[in-house]
Length: 161
Image (cartoon, rainbow, N blue to C red; front, side, top):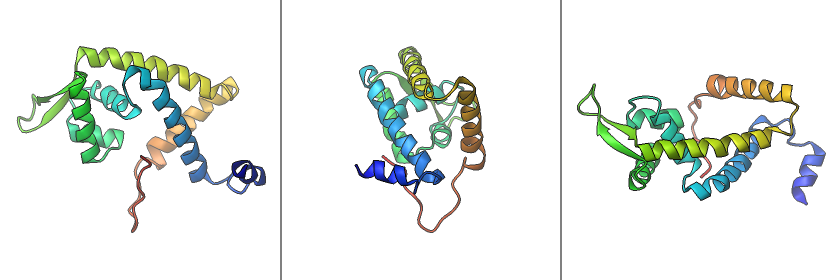
């Protein structure tokens, strides 16, 4: 198998971008499959739980989750169609609309959280218990610190679908 040959040679074993992209794609695929029975995707879940943190506008949620405007609109449309969230006028700015999570959305988010917890525990079970906490803290520092925002570049990289 080609993948085994590449891994065995170690050519990409120190390529941080390749490692993170490969892990992200595999984990996102597994998470998508795990959430299918709930009728929710990782993206809609991320929007739901972010909206539950306070009175946030669609743009604010998109920025936190990392979605472009078009994808965010489609996602909120999906959540509204399922009765999981709704757009409401902001109490602080009459021109703005906030995303409010319905009770059905809160229930769905709690159900999804259980699935995410089980999957996280399963994925991390290949690490020793002390390595798990270290790994999550270090990855969190990278994702929310040094790698939180992409740098400007002449040929912007598209996110994987």
